[in-house]
Length: 147
Image (cartoon, rainbow, N blue to C red):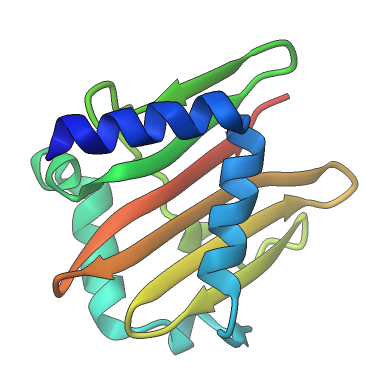
């Protein structure tokens, strides 16, 4: 099953660039869901999951979706990551949420969490998405722009 999924993802990557795939996934995660303005409105099961996700590497590796779209964009290149070559995420978005230098688009319900962060006067610097699959949270989207 994993090999078939990998072939499908590889074929998709050949047909569309990673930017397009990430944009499509972000739209999918946001569509039909209300934007939240307060961290307190995030589903409590996600809060518990995310704290463990950023502090427990073994747990994090177990919660990477097989079809994750993950990339770090540099000025001249792009690093695309898969489940096999994952770089650990330890960033706690809650620490910068109220920082005036950033603008956030936050969407969260019982099955989806999506956060897009803008650095004022620069543009989008990150997007992260999680989905509940078979009752468990998995990361399905991760993009960082370091250019």
